[in-house]
Length: 69
Image (cartoon, rainbow, N blue to C red; front, side, top):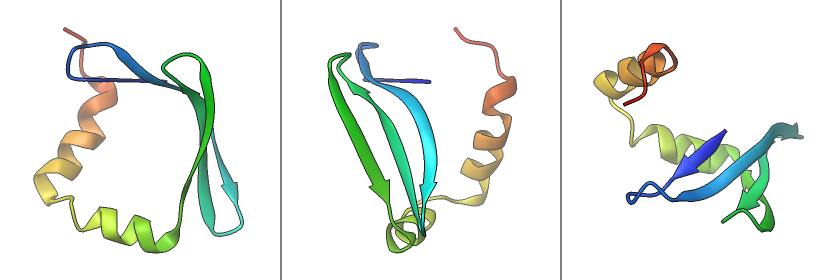
């Protein structure tokens, strides 16, 4: 999976998403060169859920079925 910036440049290439105890670990390369492992703790996941409303949840669920532009 690749994450892109506003100018369509590649920010991160995600290689894996794994569980480590109660944390979620995202591993990949930033800007195609620097390896990185980011941790998402339960507290931060709850804080992230506060940013999501019902319409955004529906959009996220439909995203894998949409065509790219």
